[in-house]
Amino acid sequence: MNKRAVIYARFSSHTQTEQSIEGQLRECYDYAKRHDLLIVGEYIDRALTGTTDKRPNFLQMIEDSKKKTFDYVLVYQLDRFARNRYDSANYKAKLKKNGVRVLSAKENITEDASGILIEGVLESMAEYYSAELSQKVKRGIKESLSKGYFIGGYKLFGYDIIDKKWTVNPIEAPIVKDMFERYKNGEKAKSIVNRLNDMGVHNKSGAKFTVNSFAKIIRNSKYMGVVVSNGQTYTNIVPAIVDEQTFTACNRIMDNQRHKQKAVQDHSPYVLSGKLFCGNCGTLMTAEDGTSHTGKVYHYYKCFNRKRNKEQCNKSNIKKDKLEDLVFGKTVEYVLQPNIIDKLAVAVTEKFNEGLQKSDTLTLLEKEQKQVQKAIDGFLSAIAMGVVTKSTTDKLLDLEQQNDELESKIAVEKSRQIQPLDYEQVKAFLAYFARKQYKNDEEKNEFFNSFIHRVVLFDDCVYIFYNTSPQTPTKYKLDKDDLTELQEHRANRKSTHFQPLGFKLGSFGGAGGIRTHEPLPAT
Image 1: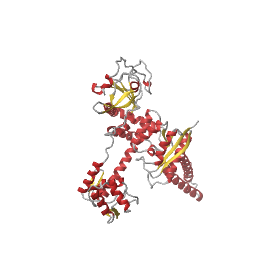
Image 2: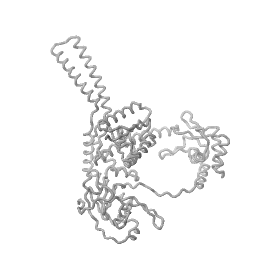
Image 3: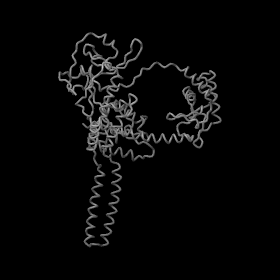
Image 4: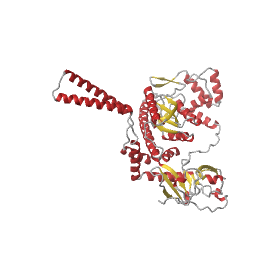
């Protein structure tokens, strides 16, 4: 039975044409035919960028994956799926949970550890070029803002845009000023909104005012003449309708009158989830939150066997941040070794490039050009031997014209082909992303997904299996301060005397790993 797949295609702007979508679909259907995939649906987003996940058909595809009606999502290239590595990893994880994998029609990405590396490098490159383009756009925006121009976006009640400049609307501005004054003097937001609606005053989109739209006006610093963009403040763009004192007073009132939100726990992602295994019993270690008697919230990893039954395993809990920072730091040190960077670059380029194939169109064009060139050579030989007639000359001119046309077609077709990865380029990207400052868990998660195959945790050491050599782990000793978390959990358990056991390398593949007395290899 053929595996079922859906195709996801998009193009980024209105400057691209439907041919862009048709070309993506054609390549995807060709790939499906070669690999015996049954296409059961298409999801297409038009004129939407891959740097945002606000893509209706994309989100619908993610939701539909829960129905288990397809096994693969087929894209023309990975950058059609997402140009942000965090979103890419996030949505791939959701698809994986539903048994669905992403395939690229133009890029040779296998399902083994090297495939993960290739995928990470390609996504890193796409993200880099997207960020580079973003910087150019930001420079353009900064230049426009410095000149006081309107740079797009939604228009504000109280203003008009005339010749790319913000201009006070003489009818709406007094209404805005009255809204601020009433609110500053103690009138409730609901009362002000009701009064506006009773008067028949509508917002810029023609809709009635609501408490939310009122709050957006009170919170918008443009009304006091201040625009903040990319951390820079501009006061030469929007003319003020209210003074700073009034704006500040209204915002202070709104802060004080806000309903206190229920305290939300920090659910930062556990970036080792699914990769971390207990060294004592082989099961997965899972995310866990706990609260001490002082009310402090702790985040840690806990052996799943121990979570179910304390008698089954005596593995200590470990602080989430402690372990993740340790593994992250060791991985950066490992990846930055010159021989590792070289090894990765060679593996990625060779594995990727070996799967590149010419399109059927390019193959036929090149074959036709060879035939034309052979005919040209024949006529040139005849002319060299003195066989010169009008028909000979005309035929030669015709063949040369054909050859020129074929060269143009071949150049166009080659531009559509996936270009081979360059070793030096891949090496530079790997070094760049290894040295990059990862400021939050989402960014660390991207790094972990690219380089870490699995992590096995004992009470005195940790084994990290890297994607560069997934069968040979690197051992790191743990300091005493790295080990324990929430000691009351250990104090309350019954005394046990488990002897930590080693495992075959293949045993850490899921809950309830196979026990064996064969130790992990020393490194």
